[in-house]
Image (cartoon, rainbow, N blue to C red; front, side, top):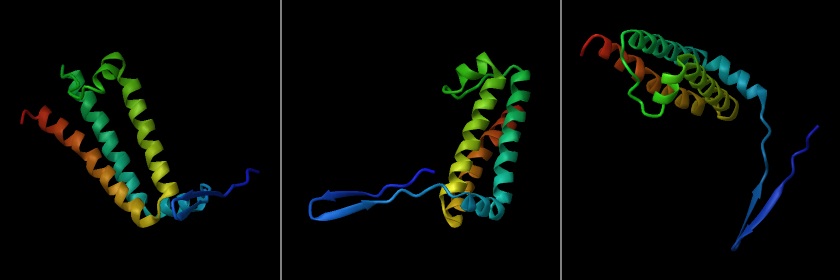
Amino acid sequence: MHTLQRQRVHYGVGRLEIVPEPVRFARLRENLSSCRNLVFAVLLAQAEDGLTTFVAFSRGYVEDNPLQRPMTSASMGVAVGLKLIVMFAMMTLVLSRLPTRRARIALRVALAMSLVAPVLNTLTLLGR
């Protein structure tokens, strides 16, 4: 079992004591149960983004995001997979490290950001 070490650092007249905090799966379980609707909504928005992007590509559209354009032109599956892995890693980090109130705020921000792409994709597909 790994033991955590305290570290003391002296800065000028003050002292800073750094105590590493272990990852607690209890916090992850607690946040996941209290934020499950937000987690589901973020995942649903990501799935909607994937669906609308797939429909747009099948109709001849190209990716406007210059960061994702090389990945999507190489392989749509790799681009979607990488995006989902990053989203899953970020949500796991948020749910395991942040208190419940801050986790809810972070998930609301993620939901707002996740809804932008499917809404824009849908408007583009409708010709607006």
